[in-house]
Amino acid sequence: MIPITVDFSALLGHYSTWRLIPVAIIGPRNSGMAHVLSHLANELHVPLLSFTALDPTISPLQYPYFIQTAPNDIFQMTAIAEMVSYFGYTEVTAVFSDDDQSRNATRDDIMNELVKVRLMESRVIVLHTYSETGLLVFDVAQSLGMMESGLPTLSKEFSLFSPHAPYSEKRRAFSSRWNKLSNRSIGLNPYGLYAYDTVWMIANAVKVFLDHGGTISFSNDSNLKGFMGRDSKSCCS
Figure (cartoon, rainbow, N blue to C red):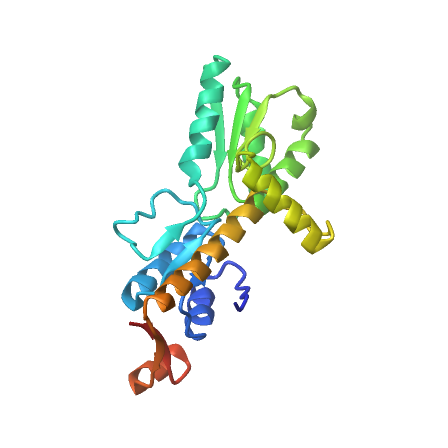
């Protein structure tokens, strides 16, 4: 397993990932990059598994080689909608980005929008954005005094809603083994469980494939050299 950091660049992710001749890929981190890499995964027949790129519009029918290994955003949005309905709130203000992962918002942009939100009568604010931008939103909101105003703020990632993995005897046993292995130096949240399941899924698939007589080989087709940056490409049969 080779970790790659591409700083949210779909183009860099495309190049960095495929030049390594993968049999399977864990990632990408965000849905914008997933849309780009899923096309290539389809063409090269390489499984692409992600537990963080959870855009519900990435259809398994359109991208059969892209697998989301955690519940997509529909589940969290449904939970927020049910809570709003349960408490009988009639007006809700949504704060969200108009780009894939809100990478373009500046502090001034966020402040201008939050000033507008503060003037509204809505008592519920739903923040739907990426984590780094979400932290900036909360920082700006605090500077505007919005965090002390008594607004019951709902956030997909921060205040109330986060991925949940039900407790069970199997999870308890796994957490115990994990704590012994890491000497309790690394915590295990739901994303950690999803990450472990994703790695296990690939490892198990490769094992079953090889146990049934499958082979993983490499092609020396010169036409692939310029595209992949290497002389070979992985393939399974």
